[in-house]
Image (tube, rainbow, N blue to C red; front, side, top):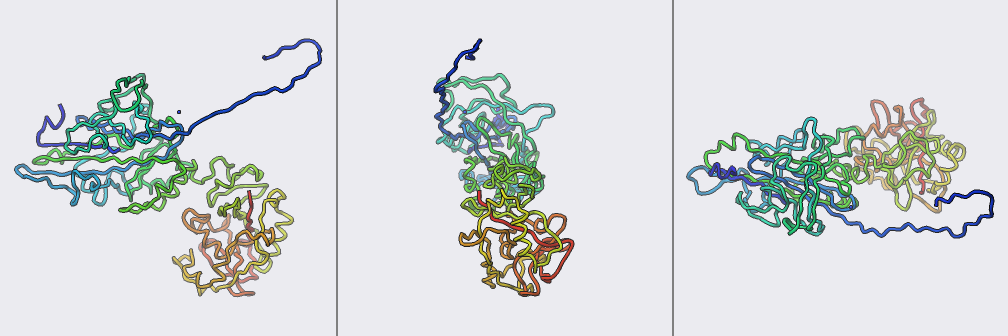
Amino acid sequence: MTPEKKNQRRLRNLALLSLLLLLVGGTFAFQAFNQRAINDRLRENIPGGRVHDYYNRDTENKDVFVENYGNVPLMARIRLSEFMEKRSAGDTDFTPIVNGTIRDQVNTWTVMRPSETNLNTRVGDSAAFNTYANLTFGWTRSGQDAPWFMPTFNRDNSDLMTASAGHARDWLTSTATDGVTDGATHPGDGTDAYWSSGDSFDNSGPVWPGEEVTHDAAQNLQQERAPMTMSQWAALPNNLKVGNFWVIDHQTGWAYWANQLQAGETTSYLLDAAQMTAAADNIPGEYYYGIHVDGQLISPDRINDFLAADPDYTHHADLSDFLTAVQNGSIDNNWGNPGPNDDVQPDQINFSIMAPGTIFTMAGEQYRYLENQGGGNHLIIRNNVTTALSFDVQNDYLDNWYTGVLASEVRAMVQPVRENFATGNVESDAIAWLEAWRWLPSNIDDFPEVAADITQVDTSGTRRAFALSLADVARLSGSGRAFPSRASREGPGSMWWWTRTPAVPGTSAWDVNRGEMSGMLSNRATNNISAVGGVRPALIIRQ
């Protein structure tokens, strides 16, 4: 008997929107003409994914996850919205607990947005539901393997129907919001652990939408970490930021699978239960509560679809880094490349998949990758600083380093730049800053020659090493760029280094500072010689 029948004063509903040997003895003359073989393949890449929602009103079990039934990887996100209204005994009309929300208009329902540090505490308008409903995120059972599910029979990738089991209702088959109407599209009663190893289901008939075949129960992926917020994700070590777990952008409510979902894989649970609280059970009258599940799937080359502006909320600042990490399989976008201390030859590196800021070692020298300039051209800078060199001798050192120190195999990749840079000049006092720590100049465009001194390939120029300009350093600094923080701009071992931009010609020049002034852009006398600072050669290479 459902809770509705047990208690006529309460209504509950959770709605889902959701591939001769030849042995020879003796001596003889031998010929082998025209040995041939063909190995070929005709393969159609077919993307296909299905959101699953298993729900049971009696037990309040609620399992939400995503299946990839196609033969190519997918990226997935899900967003939950809630609605609740209540009516006191004797009243005619229901009153929603969030003003402006309407039961029959799911687009007005309240997006579930957790706090930055705790998924179990909703914030904003969503906070109204903290009193009445508890959501259980993720799936964990002590000593148990991942749960089992029944794969979808509906493998039409143009069909937006979800795999809804038990009391869950697919939105396409039933838009009713009365708490009792059926709209399931998938076998099972929605209770916890309904499916187990060895189970199968014959869909002849068909019984449920999709192919008339028999499927065996399959297993969800084991979650590697409990679901977390985007801020909590950002605090993880880089080597843990991609994996089998859910990350919720607490600013928009979108929950993202933190890995590419490979062909034949199924995510762990985003949601494992939705249970009403004692406060809901004690409402003197009746209430209606529903969850709307919106699932979206894309191929990994379409991450901009997930970055498109949300009309109501602002994506978390780390979302782009998160999606890029998932797209490439690694937070540093260097999947498949050698590690930072693996000394390799240039042809062993794929520069086109490097993220800005990646450290790598090539032909005996360690570098920092700065940017992909297009056309196969890549801007890099030597990671280490050569100390005890003044600004006045910087160009002579760069020429000698390029011709006498730089490995020939790297030199063969170097692209030409201008023979003489038009640097312009600007004094420190003339620059305004976006923050007190002299991180980014806010008025560099007021000095057009300085702002225009951007290092690019110049086919009429010279193949050589150079120092970055003030404008280069500024444009390469910021989130997702080569220098994401002030500390990252400082040379290894807490070293400062020269740019090529003068402050007062012949007297002072711009440098990237160190120590307590780590990464700050400052001025220094051009004849300054220091044991903790100097020259850092940069190159544009082509692959």
